[in-house]
Length: 116
Image (spheres, rainbow, N blue to C red):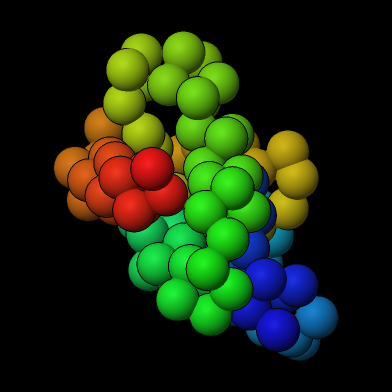
């Protein structure tokens, strides 16, 4: 269920798109962004726990690693060499929030190491 409803190329949504309170865009003024934080915004750091859980359940390193591939392009597109804090829940999952988020970077690196 998590993989079907929450996983995006850049992490996990904080709320499923089929929920009535879902907000698929993380943009606008401070009030609008704060209201969207936990209503569908994608958090990059959550991918680490998801990849680890996927590995424990399925034991398939290649499949788990595939959840990390989108970050390779992101490293060269938004904040050069780093990972954004959050992304919009709806495609194309525009990056936003903190340009260089330490826990997002750390969790992607940790997940990558688990998949080696």
